[in-house]
Image: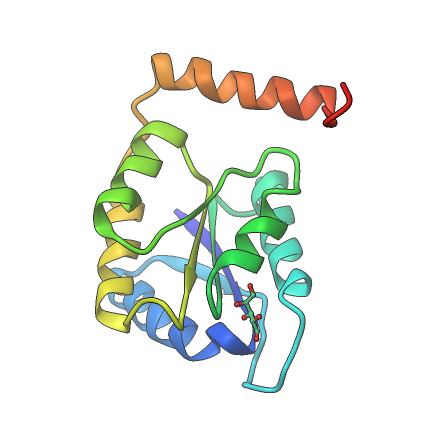
Length: 152
Ligand code: RB5
């Protein structure tokens, strides 16, 4: 398992905590930035993580900003990305089992480091169940292919 991880300034401190967890778990990762608490734009970090996932350079990604919302909105614009914004352990397991989420987004201003670490562990440890859930993911892929708009 190899991960890509990224944050903006609003998620930088939590990213450092999550990296400690990944080190403890001996999970390898590539940190795409940011590297300090100077204000930056979250799409600039969501995009490289998403591209590394869709290219197969890494298996999955983790994105952190103040709320996790901007990161998840951005990542989900990239074809093939299923980014789940998660702030509880139940959802971390469910989104792996049912949605095969390939990016986990969290908000530093929403969740503390202890719970965030447990969320990461649950998300990494849970396998996709496939079956009917795979059919549903196929329908998401169909929507991506059609690039549907409100008018279509
Ligand atoms: C930055 O202030 C903040 O807007 C960002 O980290 C994130 O919460 C956006 O969704």
